[in-house]
Image 1 (cartoon, chains in turn green, purple):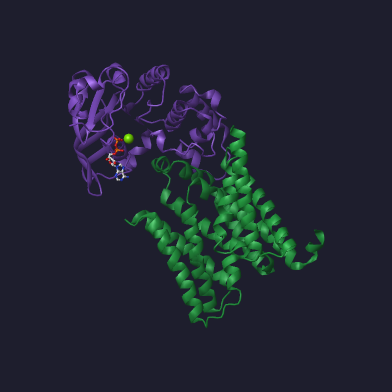
Image 2 (cartoon, helix red, strand yellow):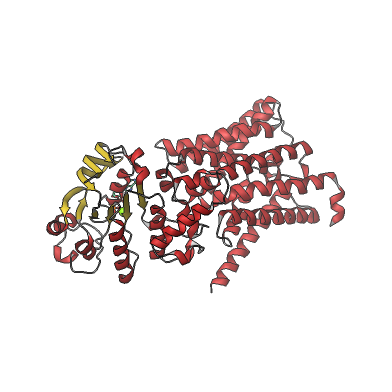
Amino acid sequence: MFEMLQYQFMQNAVIAAFLVSIACGIVGTYVVVKRIVALSGGIAHTAFGGIGLGYLLNFDPILTAIPWTILSALGIGTISRETGISEDTSIGMFWAVGMALGILFIYISSGYAPDLFSYLFGNILTVPSGELVLMGLMDVAIIIFAFFFYKKLEAVSFDEEFAKISGINTRFVYLLLLCMVALSVVVMIKAVGIILVIALLALPAAIARKYTSSLLSMMGYAIILSIILSLGGLYLSYLFDLPSGTTIILLLACAFLLSSVQQKVAMN
Amino acid sequence: MEEVVELKKVSFSYDSLPVLRDITLSVKKGDLVGVIGPNGGGKTTLLKIILGLLQPTKGKVSVFGKPPETGRGKVGYVPQISKFDREFPIDVMGVVLSGKPGNIARPGWAYGQEEKSSAIEALETVGMKEYAKRQISKLSGGQIQRVLLARALMSEPGLLLLDEPISSLDPDAQKSFYELLGRLKEKMAIMIVTHDLTAVTEYMDKLACLNGNLYYHGKTKEGIKHLEATYQCPIELIAHGTPHRVLRRHK
Ligand SMILES: Nc1ncnc2c1ncn2[C@@H]1O[C@H](COP(=O)(O)OP(=O)(O)O)[C@@H](O)[C@H]1O
Ligand SMILES: [Mg+2]
């Protein structure tokens, strides 16, 4: 097992797994308790437009995906809250339009997108060192937001109306949360890909939730679970020569099923 | 006496569905007002208007002489527990601590010693001190109700709004809950939405009967005879003692 670690790309993959786990553990916790899994799935898919824009402008697609996804998150959040358009309609709209724009941008930019597949389905084995730094920076931003707004995010997640009465600017906190989702999506794209991001965001936190009584410990458990499962998935994909993103997601789903069965058994 | 809540000719509709029509109501310090009416009668909507969560389509609302958005700083709200996610990973202390705006303004997850002792004090008031560390999913409905009341008390409110707080309590717990409210009303005004008519006659000073229109607002004793109009079903059916939930309009 350890001989695989002598390769640079493997070392990068392991570091990427840690960085991805920090993002999905922290943000995923709020996504699960605030029940915005579908909304976050929508935000994740809009990111594809940002990737396409990168190809069009001849820029690192991850760099263009950051502001693009944040703006999309603010867009979904604002439209579903402030207009008469319902939340699931605006999710569907952003989801499809984001994907469509991505394809359009790539088409205009000559249509040649060599690693398009890895943005869609992820390839944790091809994360360059420079990207790791970027992922690390986004993690730092997520940690800072999560620390400074911990109580407000908790209050808004638990009882938004009460939080509003208490004088919290709930609209701001909610949009901040969606921006954190956007950041975490971009952190995760390289590892599992746009289409699979939502599983990594939701599943470790959903498993962790069954065993905790505070958001902080839920985040901790979710991070640890995600590290174990993504490294496990990485190892299995190396062993059997499978696509890494897919293997990680399937392993996550198995873990989630097992924990659900274990909970059911424990209750009886 | 100090005017706590004043509604003048307030109407409200959700989109095109009219829910409240021309409600005029005043609540003063020391009042314990029971708000009764059938399900869908607009009771929760009325509380949300007082809290400034909903804007009336017509009419004027003032809370402590100010518009609700500013006056609600002195209002404690105990929502209907049916809306809560009981599996939310938070313990009793966490819920109560979040009740004080100053507590949640600071960064990080830790709370100060002073904040914790005021939360313990609030829990003691509602008789839930021993449960401080308990996860909310491991509480009964009545216990959660008390925890939510403790949360509302954290901001030292001058007005307490309770939305169906007793439907999940057994008779003993109901009695002690009303006694607790009786002690609290020395310091504040209380509006309580309830279906429990025994309690209304026994503990409330004033009654508001709501079914779209406000059918009666005033002293409890005289108000009882207006119940029939509110619920639109025969009075014997709704006033025979035990709590009675009226499901839908009869004609
Ligand atoms: N958010 C909402 N959107 C649309 N209609 C609503 C909403 N909330 C409540 N209503 C409707 O308004 C009416 C009054 O509701 P509510 O104030 O909750 O009644 P109560 O608390 O007396 O049972 C009901 O007919 C209900 O269906
Ligand atoms: Mg109600």
